[in-house]
Image 1 (tube, rainbow over the protein chains, first blue to last red):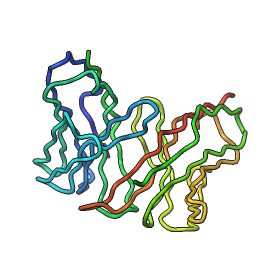
Image 2: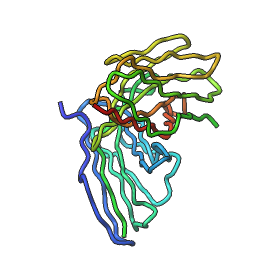
Image 3: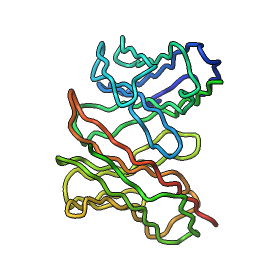
Image 4: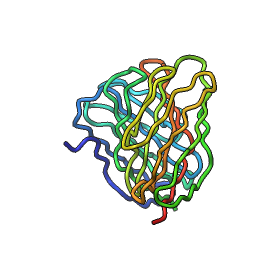
Length: 114
Length: 114
């Protein structure tokens, strides 16, 4: 059981370039999330989805877009990368919308923008 | 708004020492509380959870009790091992539009020396 899989694992971009991060889960979860992790700041929610075809803004959505065309996939796009977007990005999923459902995380993508 | 505060690290202990990582929270309702652990190069994974006041979550020798009167969820382990070296995140989950929202603390890095 793969759980949550993120690709790529590492990426280096120049300022202004674009890229898409892919997240795939095989647990049939309804909810999916994109977080960024920065030193000393914990995890901050970028965007999330409560089901196929839905997306919503999180705490730090500016500069990012997302799509959830299929239930198992959640894509995070950077249209014009900036050095402030250098971070580790984590995708997560959960089975339902109850507060006691834990999050299941992928192993992360380390992005450097120069 | 709601928040989670953890003790700053790093915490360095010798093998078999007693571990406490403090976590306090602010919340307007009745959140669920979690501890997640992140090993090097990996995503976060659920360590334990508690969903109501006075509940005790436990797993792999770790314990934490949901204390509503002190708004705390401190993580403890009686005898740490080198393999427990990781970053530990306290988190709360509260109801949000269309589901729930998870708020993370900044994380506490634990080093265990042999």
